[in-house]
Image 1: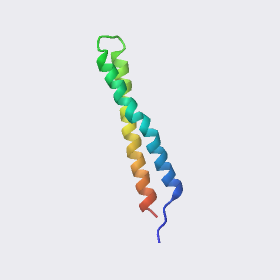
Image 2: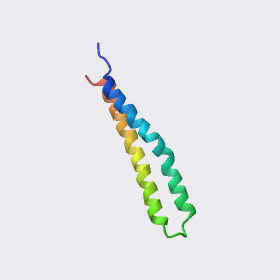
Image 3: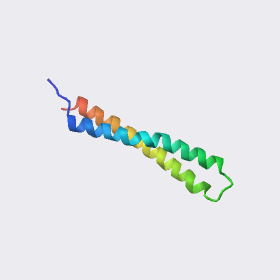
Image 4: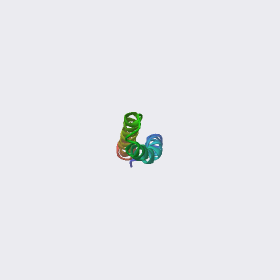
Length: 74
């Protein structure tokens, strides 16, 4: 009978836990950038928001990949 690798499962949950704040922070930063288009820091704030949103997507992907590995690999 297969058993779940608990260390890998915990690692996947940590990836998800790291992505949760970024999921909310990224769109908030992008929204703030679009509300201040006339300011000189528009582009750096927009780029930061895009990078944070991309990091959230990456962490979600890694979390799902790690959870699948923990549940179904031997």
